[in-house]
Amino acid sequence: MKTQLSKITLASPEDGQDVELFVLEQTRIFGKDYLLAADAPDGDGQAYILKDVSRDGDAEAVYEFVEDDAEMAALSTVFSQMLDDIALV
Image (cartoon, rainbow, N blue to C red; front, side):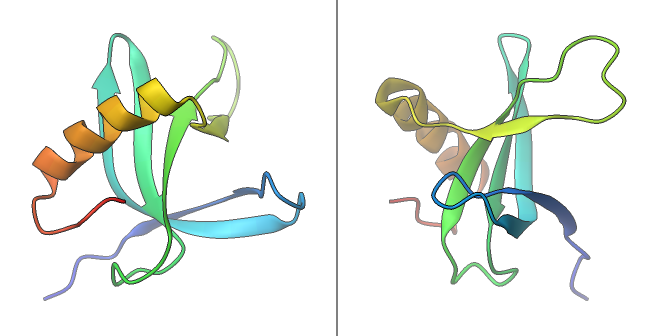
């Protein structure tokens, strides 16, 4: 039985258009929440790492794409260990 994946919608950093992503995994590191999300539910799509940049009191979570190379490398390692069957490039 397949698990239903959560979906989120946010603006693409390339063109500002809404992008629907499927949340594959989440983690909390040093008090920050991160998501591993993909544009396809089956793992064949483009994967992204998102950081929660919400402030206390925000009604909804606010996520941004992780673009810092060092942060991306560290988080890729964490998510790879959490999901050993998904290759992150």
